[in-house]
Amino acid sequence: MTQSSEGARGSKEALCSGLRAAIPALRLLTDPADLEHYGRDWTRRWVPAPLAIALPASTEEVQAIARWATTHGIALVPSGGRTGLSGGAVAANGELVVSFERMNRVLDFNAVDRTLTVQPGIALEALHKAAAEHGLIYPVDFAARGSCSIGGNIATNAGGIRVIRYGNTREWIAGLKLVTANGDLLDLNRGLIKNSSGYDLRQLVIGAEGTLGLVVEATLRLTDPPPASQVMLFAVPKMAALMRVFAACRSRLKLSAFEFFTDRALHHVLAHGAQKPFEEIAKYYVVAEFDAADESQQQAALEVFESCLNDGLVNDGVLSQSEAQAAALWRLREGITESLAAHKPYKNDISVRISAVPDFLDEMSALLTREYPHFDVVWFGHIGDGNLHINVLKPADVADAEFVAQCERVTKLLSDVLARHGGSISAEHGIGLVKKAYLSGTRSAAEIALMRAVRGVFDPHGLMNPGKLFD
Ligand code: MLT
Ligand code: ZN
Image (cartoon, rainbow, N blue to C red; front, side):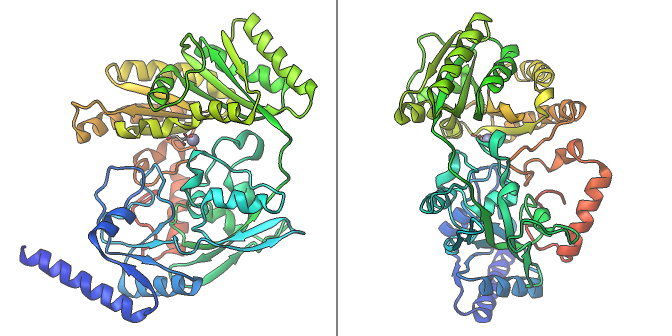
C-alpha cells in the first residue's frame, strides 16, 4: 500500500469516527461489500467508491447528517431502491451515501383528503398495497415497482406505463418534506390542493435528482380504482402503422396504457422465459390496456381490431380473457428490461410530443440503422405518451469503453434529431451522470443557467448529489 492510499484510508476512518461521534445512534456501514452494493444503481458503468453508507432512521438523523456533511464538506448521495438507469444514485467519489432503506413506513392515511403520507424508502409496490387497503390506488406504475422507492420516483419524476391516463409522479405529490444542505426542514405545500402563494418549491424538488436536498417525507394523492380492464396485443407489420393503431384505439376505447416493442425485444423476452404470443413474428407489437367493464367496451375493442386488420395496420391480435392472460401479455412488455440486463445495454430514454412521433420515428430509425449497422438495437416504450426506449446491446467482443464511446457518438446525433423535433433526451429516467453531455439539446442555455443558479441557492457548497444533472 502506498503512503497516499494509507493516508486516504486514515482520513476516511477519521471522518467516519467523527460522524459516529456526532450522531451516535446512526447506523453506518463501511464494509467493502456494502460500499459496492449501495454505491451503484442499475447502470453498471461506474466503480462505486463511497466514503460510507448512512442508514438514518428518522428525519432528525437526516438533518444531523446534512449538518455534519456541510461542516466537513462531504458530498451526499441519496439512495432508494437504486433501480435508476442514469447513474443518479452512483457514489464513485468518496461521498456519503444516505440510504433511505430504514425510512420505509406509511406514516398516515387521510380518508378525507385521500392522501397517504410515506417515508421516502417505501417501495412503489408496498405503496400500491397500502393504498389498496383503503380501497384506493396510487396510479403511477412500472416494471421496477417491487424494488424502486418513492424517493427515487420523486427524484426522477418517474412516469411508467399509465402516464397516458394518470400523468407522471409530479401529478400525485401533494406535499414533500425536504432536508436542505444546511439541515433545515422544509414542509412544501402541506398537502394543499389550492395554494397560490408564490413559487411551488415542491414541484422544483420533483425531478431534481436529489440536487436540492433530501426528501424525507411525501404526501401522495390517491384516487378511485379504475373499472375492470382488458389487455390487447397486436402484431403490427410496419412502423408507420403504430400511431395509426394508437389513433384507432384512442377513438373508441378508454385507454390506460399503450406500449410498443419490436421483434428484437420479443426475441430477448422470449429467450428469458416469456410465452410466444403468435405463430408468425411481426416487426412491431403493441400492448393496449383499456376499460372493459361492460360488453359494449369489449365489443368496441373487437371492432377496433377488425378495422385495423381490414386497413392492414395489424396482422394479428389477442384479447385477454382473464387476469392471468392479461399478466402474460404484460410480461412481454414489462420483462424486456430484465431480459436485456445481461447484455450491458446502453440506454436512451427519449420523448417527443405525441403528434411528432411518426416523423421522429422515421428520422430516428434511419439514424439508428445507419449508425449501428452491427449492434443489436432494441426499441420499446410508452409510445402512447411519446416516450421511446432504445437499448443498444454490447457485443461480447467489443470492450466496454469502446462500446460506450460509439453509443455516445450516436447519442449526440440523436440529441440533434430530438432538438429538431422539440423532444427531450430524458423522458423519465433522469439525466444523472449518463446524459449530462446532452442536456443542452433539450434545455436552452438560459434555462440551464437558471437551473444552475437555483441549485446554488439550495446548495451553496455543492454537496447535494454533485456531478448529477449538470456540473
Ligand atoms: C421500461 O419502461 O421498461 C424502462 O423504463 C426502460 C428501460 O429499461 O430502458
Ligand atoms: Zn419506461
